[in-house]
Length: 284
Length: 102
Image (cartoon, one colour):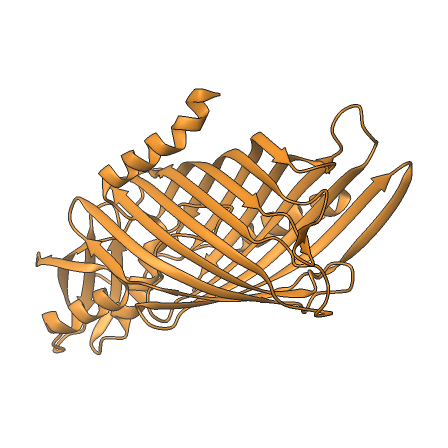
């Protein structure tokens, strides 16, 4: 466990040593370099995830299928705009009763601005902050029913065929709520490091296979009601996610399995299980 | 689970239908100019740069290679493409131009 705790720090230091930038190493996180001016990127994924009550407590369980549809456009070489709409399906089981809900999730729009990009023969380094807004446009029972402000910083590096993307994110949840006097949802902090190695396939520069490893830590603060923490809310999770990315020209097919290494939920909450992700993206 | 499988099948179908054509390169047309390009890191980088290069008047076809760190342009007979035009296209693709090789 000590080794696992130290691993992200070691990898981060190694990544800085690489001083290189990656164009889109991450699979589960939209990270990487800003795309060329005028380029459109369409991306969709199927994410299957689950939660179960801790052993020996209840039979509560939740299965969830999420399909995010993402459109990204390189408006300027420095400025990237994006939009994400999730289609969400949840199945909740408790005491033998099953409750299903499905519909559209909340709409998320974001802008990423390139503040640094150094391209050399040996390495590439890029830094781009992100600002995004999530609006409560989703279906009833699926929507968060509050506005969120997302801030992020992407640091990307490339050296030869190796790539690394570090994403730091902070989400101000519930900057405006519906109704306004509902409890304050906890803010979220996220840290994701994705490492990849491109392997050209079949002697062609048009096709490549890339093993990817994502190391993530995410923490959600407890909700608050009248300034007092709501019981059974708030958690932190450390996950590892090995994956594979296949690139053929403008098409990328990607998949990964994310499993929790350690997690800590406050009070009585369901634990996070594995997540399976399969995605496709196409660039125009 | 059923909906997952359907979604995966749809993705696979989409993937199967999509392919990246090689850029047209008629060896009989025009001259070839080549530039070093730094910052490309996977095959997905090619298309954006090639699209921007094709916007340069007189460029007949463009082919980028992230492995060789190169952009090759076939220029139409009688047309003139300046280094500045190519550098501008490379910059707008968020890459950096190196030396002109040809």
